Image (cartoon, rainbow, N blue to C red; front, side, top):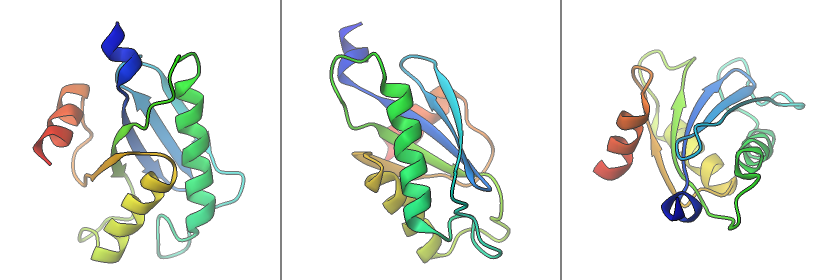
Length: 126
């Protein structure tokens, strides 16, 4: 129980103009659609500030009820527009959006959808 108050792990799936976030400690899920679209014709996150603001709101929503505000460890997973993988720039965009939203550690994952154990594995591997 104390460990849940002192740690926070989030699995963030990114789709066009929305974030689906799962808090692994509480098991809570939230889907937040951006009021200002952040996806452009070529990039899943093409409007940085809109994406960062939306993700910050989603992480705050899941942190409600915690006694301490803890910067989460995040696995961020682009679910669309990744044909051929991510460029270095796209990878950095995902990292910077998560850090700007409050994450203390970020892993970008491209591949199959992860279960909770795999999310923790990815974070421990880095």
